[in-house]
Length: 237
Image 1 (cartoon, rainbow, N blue to C red):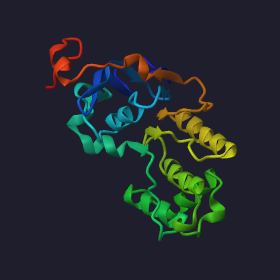
Image 2: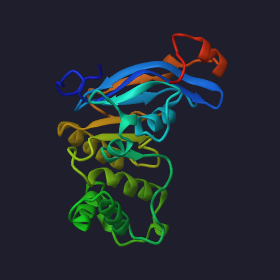
Image 3: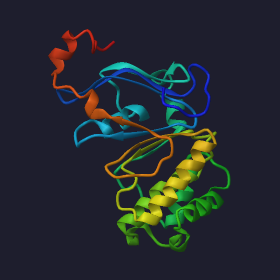
Image 4: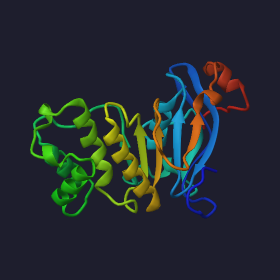
């Protein structure tokens, strides 16, 4: 179990004998973990070890070759809409609309999430990442680091009770030290409120009491035919 606050037996996110394929290769196999409320999991490993692939599985954007993922004991595949509503996923791609200002981008996201007072929430989220000074600047004029911070500011729009699971793919890329520290502060506050965080990184991020998972330890070189034949990996349902 990845430690967080004291949970009930099935509370939180769990992976059960998870196996991932990319093309015709097994990326990782037989991965098990449980992330409790308040917990943090840091994914490390060389390029190609499956960090981004695992985050996509956890988000429901991809399906595992075998094994399953559960939330509070229930398979996330049973209600994908509910699972998407409970998480925030920050990937590599720039989601900032170039014709909208930083404030408008966040206000639209808050509205799409069904949050009350979207503009007020957007203003506070920008301030949390020291981006309030560019609130009225169109996205096309933002630097790479500023666009990254606008994307990450979406994390601050909703309380942990509404979106408890944060999935962050290399969130410190293009950020300066001050911005990384501000992100770490957001993560700490989210966890204290019962939220959970899974992030991948190639750099050092100060995430207190986080558990590190090296996906290279679960790497495999089998192809699809081998995976079907290997009882330890299992065949898809």
